[in-house]
Image (cartoon, rainbow, N blue to C red; front, side, top):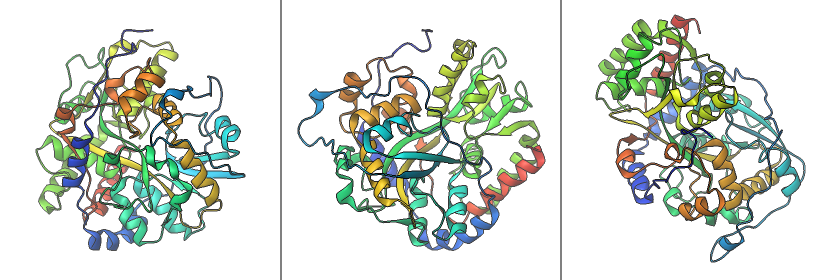
Length: 419
């Protein structure tokens, strides 16, 4: 085991800090957001990644017993179901066993998983299908949920079929986008930063401006950025001391001028999940979500590389705070199986197994105890659990009238980059 991958003392997030950040920042302008949905659908391309089913090879697929935790209001209800379940989610977002043999053996469900790059792609797919997408479970980021409800893209839960929701920490329930959790429940939450090869970029990167400078210099032609308009534009706004939810035309014009005219030509690829490509040596610098960057350390080592030369940092002075959610698509072919699988994934042992793989906080109650008992050898925990000072720099997204412009900027960047 390398020094980088040794278990480390975890700095658990205080739930009050998380709730304060979301409650203060998640303000939804529903009129303009709902009206703008049609434009977003028209502007976004469909899913370019095609159908993909995760590998189910290798590893012990049995969650830790953890019987000592089965007390009080902790629930482990298993609702058996049958048939095939189709999920549309972010890339490499569940332990392959949990969307594979373990789901089939535990609750009788076989799964097919497709991936999207952005919330805009997800909305495009569902809106275009008009209730016949074929997907059962979808995984949007919180601020997009109100417009998805308004447009009839997701359906209400039968919460009697998800009793294990009691296992979620109250800090991650009753968010402003769904105050009664009728349509959604926390899958996990995370943030955004960057990951770089210190043998290529020898200076420490601290700010988003440092990231841009390195991408345009040492890592020119060898860097990637997340494939979503709000994320890449957000990095520019944060680098320039501006609110990433701005609707000011001059700010957005300046953002476009830099990203399209100055940065785009240096970008090798728009890649929302760069960990595998990083292990293959495709990039020297990548904008990344924290869990995917954490997976990169393991994949680099498995590929015979040296993970110790790679560094990770949160963007500063500010960066993103997001929460993704399990929802059931309107017209889901197998809603019973969808409820059953979500309920099963909210069992603490299953949730912590999933966390250990994908590297995002799943929002379970008593997280410190669960990690101690169920995943005592967890590596790179500092990339999953953040302290109050770090959370204080994180900002949640608002869905407002600027969203379509941010998508347009991304598309212009791609055209300029030829990527």
